[in-house]
Length: 353
Image 1: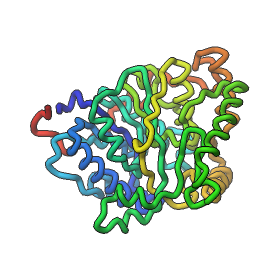
Image 2 (image 1 turned 180 degrees about the horizontal axis):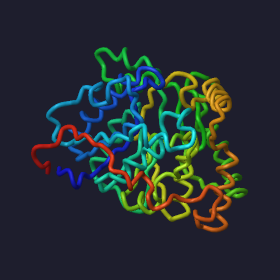
Image 3 (image 1 turned 90 degrees about the vertical axis):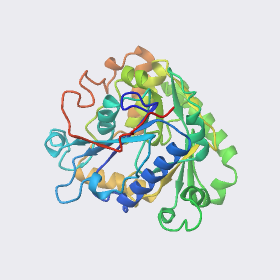
């Protein structure tokens, strides 16, 4: 591998603020697992971590994490968006991270032929990594998988088994194309196929009424993969200065209308998401309610389902993101005009065939 042309760039955003609880521990597991899999399956990979608005009283991510040594297949780049840039955005005093703008920072600077946008509390199934190792990804497509939410005690209790094996045994819910289903609820876990078919019928009606395409946008912020050219054509995620909910879905709606077709990788190609504390991000039920209450109390903007429907309807009518209510990113998206500090970890010493 060379630093200039890895096959895959993986982009994520974080800061050392313990968001969601046990953040460094969750991130360490993400790192260790990714490095191990890329090595075993020989996937030339560039991991780009955007350290957004790092807290002045905490260690940097570089200093807080333990970096795997001697991996010839992975180079990690830590790109920092400093507080003075963060403070230029609306709600900067209430939102410590603008996640999708941060991902755009990484996407814009990525060198890989294909770019995967994900998060720091995600593990990839062995079957998914085996698929990526085939190097059969194609331009003009975006790739999606189901997300499995797992109990947070997998951080501590996998013992003699592997973290991935522990994830498979500690499933909480599954986020599929047309709905989310809880394994702990008998009425959800047993008839998932039938409930998913019912939700499909509901989504068909939404497509007919509003133009929202039959895409797998459920939990898409944790796994959206496509060619670098396609990310550039889309100009990344819409750079809305608000809480990040639904912004990931807007990207896939736009991709659909620009002719970038979805490829759904079926289970066991899947990802595992380590559950975080209730209200720190979106989770069904009480976590969702706590999140909206917190955002409303602080006066922080966020998108709702009706915004997605309006955006879809406008795109169906015009096919032009520049004519929608939400609009389109300017040419400097991803903070392109800024020279941002960067630390490179683990530059490979030799090329991998």
